[in-house]
Picture 1 (cartoon, rainbow, N blue to C red):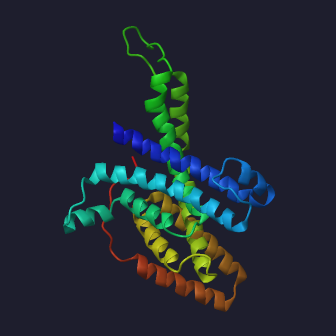
Picture 2: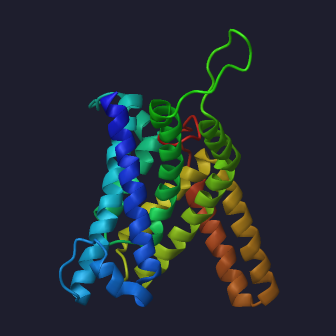
Picture 3: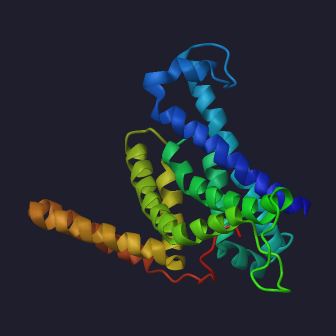
Length: 269
């Protein structure tokens, strides 16, 4: 039970910190003085302090992710074992992959868009925890629908369950597209020296694993490939056609290396 609350606490920490950070990032130029005085851990209005503020918020977000994913990985895989079978199983587990990715972002220079997939995951987990654990403690159950039947969840809990169920697939599609956007961001960020050269390499390997394990990612890649193909054909420049053709060939060779399939598409359950 304690682990369950700690897991939920990690998601709530990530959710609130990421929301705070992303709002500050989006509205930075227009209301930055308000953010300096609006409850942030910040005492001086300086550009150096502003960078520290953003980093602390981002670090708190991914600290929540590390807590939640570490608990899930421990529950699903058990204590770490120094043998090849355990390592192979762990590396093929989606939650372990997101745990490693969260640690990479936590220890790296902030990339704001990198928070977005974790924010969506935590939103759904926080809503589910609220419905299954918090609401029954504070909201009375509904009467049975039939004589002698069991008590039913509160109507608010049922509405929340319906919303989560109806919007889950759409949210996972948004996550898949956002992860492609993140790769483009860190790729150009490495070229422009705005993030480390390691970031696109780490994220490319992560996306390769996601492609094999997630139908949502495969669909997003297919749509992106079709859009780029259409753009290249409309431009119809020989150099661009050649570059894109060779890039697809290299990506295809790299991605075609065999990987151990992992079961399940759900993350951090």
